[in-house]
Every structure is written in C-alpha cells, then in structure tokens.
Length: 218
Ligand SMILES: [Mg+2]
Image (tube, rainbow, N blue to C red; front, side):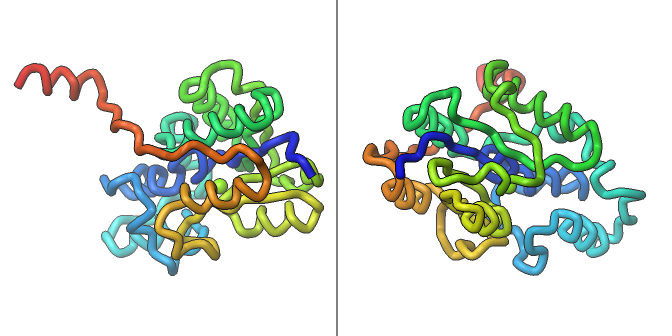
C-alpha cells in the first residue's frame, strides 16, 4: 500500500521537548540531549522533574504540573537536530499538504497557543494549517497513512487501527538501545517508500546574534 499521508509527532520528534522542559522546570542547564535521561523516569516528564527537584533540595512545583509549562516554554523548545531533515523527506515523499504535525495537547490553552507559536516561528506560517492537536492519534490511522512518533503507546494504537508507523528511538521506548533515531528512521522508511531518505548530516549549531557578536569581538 502506498503511503499518501504522513503524520509527524511534535514533542521529542520535531522538537526536543523533554530535555528542554526538564531544564526549564528544574532550573538546570543540561545539554539538550537524551543521553542523560534516566530510565526510571520512563516517559514521565512530571516524574523526572519531581525526582530531580527533590534530589536538588528544591521544593515541588505547585498545582497542576502542566500549568507550569507556559506558552513561552512551549513556543521556545529547540528543534531536534533532524527536524528539518525529516520534514523535507516527508514533504518530498507525499507533498506538503499531505504532511501533518500530530500532537497531543495538555488541557491548558497555553499549550495550544505555544505549539502554534512554535510551528510558525520554527517552520513557517503555512505549517500551522497542518497542525492537528488531539490525544486520539489512532483515530487518524488508515492503510495509506504513516505516523512517526516516539510514544510506544501511540505507535501500538495506530498500528492496531490499521495504520503504518515508524518509532523514533528514545530512552522511554523499546528502541532505547538504538544509538541514534535517524538511522532507524532511514531503515524503516525503505519499507514504505521507493526513494530512500537522503543521508543525514548534523546541522551547524545556531548561535544567537549576541554570541556571534562576541565571536566577532574576539
Ligand atoms: Mg512525542
């Protein structure tokens, strides 16, 4: 069956949600990477934040955890290194209008607004019309649709509903031993598409204007 539509998960696929939000809510300055994510935290950012705040002797965050994730935090999560590579491959494979960003929102409006802000600033205004916010991802499954997601639960449900999937390797899913998500995505891609994905090269790290200015001043 030919794949005609691609659904790309946002958090921890297109953007480095968990490490960034961890830093924001714990007050740490860890590298934006999944290397330090502790297996005992599983896929629970709440547990990771609570555990580390306790270890550091910091008080626990008040109230509903997700109320602490402000619109600014949602809007400012950095892209994963392979975000643009994945989007370009998806667009080439099925066309822009058949690529959707499929993401589960929290119950708070800041999340809806912040995710839209992120898509507009990181991908461009046109992409916000491809943004689909729902926790019921499997309702969109069919034999000609492909979901690319890091959540084993989402992957299983999408498969069970008759869809196709590629899992993105993360410490909390069964691909946790994969050294890099990219090679696994490229490998699975060949199951669905005749044209292989281009090789992935790590993009140059962007620096802010201020940092560039400092470099020039040296
Ligand atoms: Mg995700």
